[in-house]
Length: 83
Image 1 (cartoon, rainbow, N blue to C red):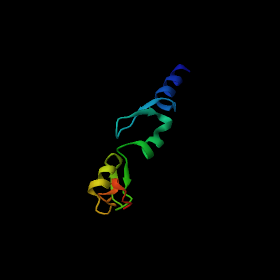
Image 2 (cartoon, rainbow, N blue to C red):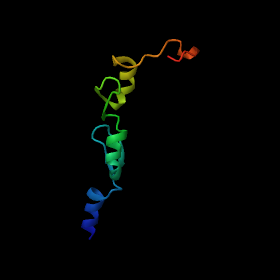
Image 3 (tube, rainbow, N blue to C red):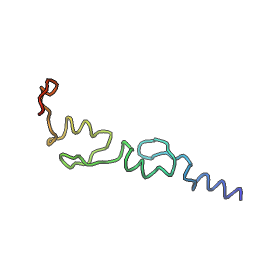
Image 4 (cartoon, rainbow, N blue to C red):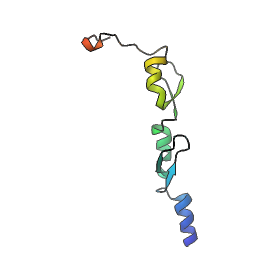
């Protein structure tokens, strides 16, 4: 029984802490899919403007600087321009 408990705690328990192989974050094993699909900064997501696959952590820069199809705000937006 003790041997089975050790195995469970190390390899099976959904509450055990695991480390993301992509970003190094620690979280409970039960949260693995949620982390991988929605929170990992190393996951690839698609740019809504050009469709390119970009790491989540770099999407803001891509949309603001690199994407040839992103919307460019008017330089007078702070003064009230709605474009």
